[in-house]
Picture 1 (cartoon, rainbow, N blue to C red):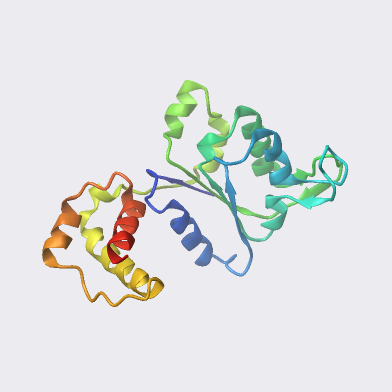
Picture 2 (cartoon, rainbow, N blue to C red):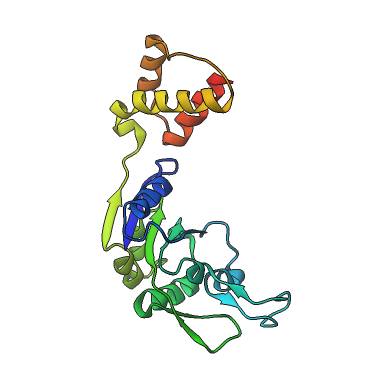
Amino acid sequence: TVLICGESGTGKELVARAIHRHSSRNDKPFVVVDCGSLVENLFESELFGHVKGSFTGATATKYGRLELANGGTVFFDEIGNISMNVQTKLLRVLQEREITKVGSTQVIKVDVRVIAATNRDLQKAVQAGTFRDDLFYRLSVVPVTLPPLRERPDDIPPLANYFLKKYNQKRKKNIHAISTKAMKALVKHDWPGNVRELENAIERAVV
């Protein structure tokens, strides 16, 4: 179980995908759960699935994300956004490695690797009482911290050149290089939006 921490735009999902790709589970699914966009009353159904007729609108039996990821990796993006109620249910899944669909009594065993990511300071959230300490310790078996781009300026030139190549192909352009002056400006910028902001800047320049 891995907990990836870092500001928005530092590439947390890319790291999660790399961990999965280099693991023994790489031939099994990599399933993303976007904790920031899921509505709480649907979170349980999304995570565990539901049986037909279990609630209004449940017109068919649905597989949950954990069941879909069985044998592979489930990636909880922005795990710090989930409510205390959902945290409790998630903790039980991590402890027991089993789920029950909404509206069902049948227990289903799941074998998943859990990777979580957050741009929040979860230790502060634990101290503030908004994040369960037992869930935090369960998630942060292997903590990985991604530094912001402003703390690793040496990464800017290779990233900029990579994005130049990518958007040359995507936009069918033929821009050979970034000028020395432009590259110096890129390296000096503090990039509050991190790698994502750099990528957008290069794409905009190519366009």
